Length: 127
Image 1 (cartoon, one colour):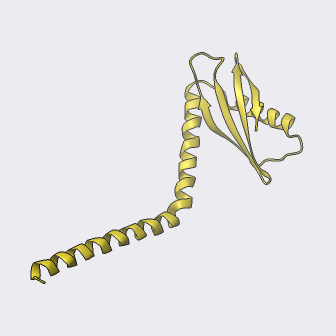
Image 2 (image 1 turned 90 degrees about the vertical axis):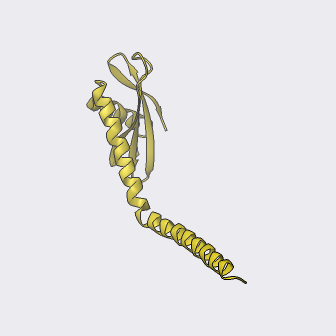
Image 3 (image 1 turned 135 degrees about the vertical axis):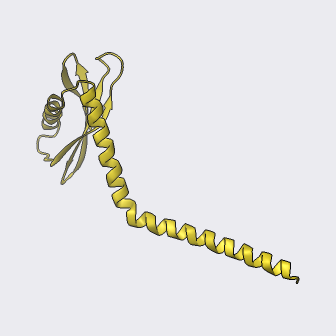
């Protein structure tokens, strides 16, 4: 074996070693930061949806009231701790506007889809 062949084999082995080490490091970092990353992502999405709703002139208090009423009608014995606006579907016109709320309680989650009718909001579906 020539010196050139030995040098090429060593360089190839080092490249493979660095590649595998990099993959393992990314995987470990992903495990450590995974939970907080997705939590921050969720908070950012919620803030974005709230901003869109406020910028479009939608009254959040009216929407939340409609969502709470819908949950009370559909699941009267179910309690929830948090109610989050998770999706704003603002289409041209008023009649096709939709807002999705997620109610989170000790027994699980429930999605409420509200539809806009004129200046008011009504429950289209509670999942």
